[in-house]
Image (cartoon, rainbow, N blue to C red; front, side, top):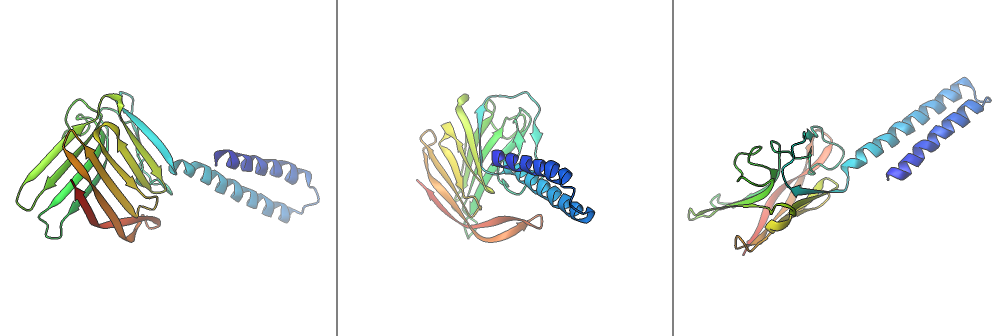
Length: 230
């Protein structure tokens, strides 16, 4: 994408320089129209190059403390809506992906969260980790279960987030927690296989209709979860 776009820009510039300035037969009006078309082409191509960075990409975050400044992306692009927005994640920043479901009678619920944060940036987390997960489950008999789990240190406990279209997928390597999302955000599946917690199961969220984000960006609304917990 980047290589082809760069070649296209260079071709336009060459055409503009050679074709425009050497073609003395063009009238002033024709020359101005040509200039406008070239400028529009440059703008559109540059726009494609810049916003391709919001498309499919993979980020691997090792589980160690970073002291460098963090930079946040505060304006949504044409894609990558559910992708990471903070780089790098330092000791006082936080970013998370949060999935939950509630039964129709409102008595049973599950919350699963994936964190890129320390307890300094997100005080509810346990100390000693920059990458962690937790699961909170409440049952209709009043039983409440809460399981926080830190990743292993360093690259052994790295987190991987893949952005594809507007959706994302993530794997918190050593915890056994992961999620998979479609590019159009029509479905998310959270999978858990954690021997240390004794939990194995999945949560599926399917979209039931589309909604609008910022008047023209497309996203989805989720409902009707399917929960399987072993």
